[in-house]
Length: 47
Image (tube, rainbow, N blue to C red; front, side, top):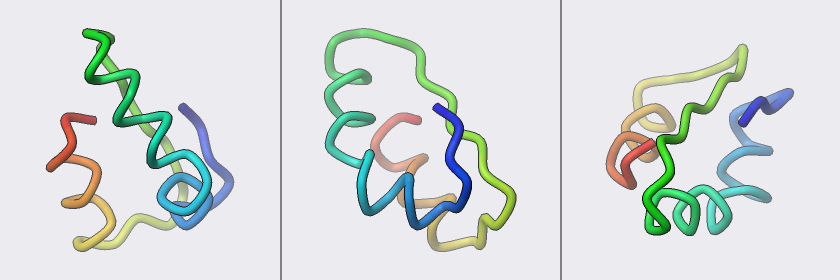
């Protein structure tokens, strides 16, 4: 999943990312403005 900002990934795509991981898909998320907390949030759900 590519997001313009990490906030778009966490705010609008978070549930979709979780569902994709739960369905067994290998999910990658790309954005230009990661910080430690946002990166860790995605890692915690398996992205």
